[in-house]
Image (cartoon, rainbow, N blue to C red; front, side, top):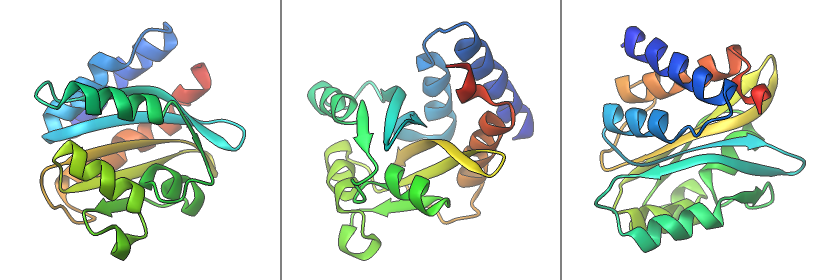
Length: 168
């Protein structure tokens, strides 16, 4: 698990350091964790700015494109999305199909469109400041502390520790 995480962080550092697309790295994380869609955003002034978004090849291309366009810039007022909640609350946000329970109605709508069951958005910290978010949607129900969530959390922590979002 740790070796895979380290390899992913090395690839992420190479991509961001050389101003290349992070798509292959996101694809690798998506496959490794068995996800449906994954995205990486950095914090801007009052909004999240998309660095990359990937979906499984079998996802409806129009839905994938719509989400990518919708989340190019996300105002931090859009609190119905897990990626925003993770930044504002400074803790991971778990979205489910029952948006009324999680308060993440926007995430629930996208989960339905993605044919996924759950999303997990992890804030990325640089020291004590949230500088971005890494989020994945999966077809499985996981719980905080499960291996998959630990891996994603470790990747997000590594991105922050290495200050990779500062390379942009």
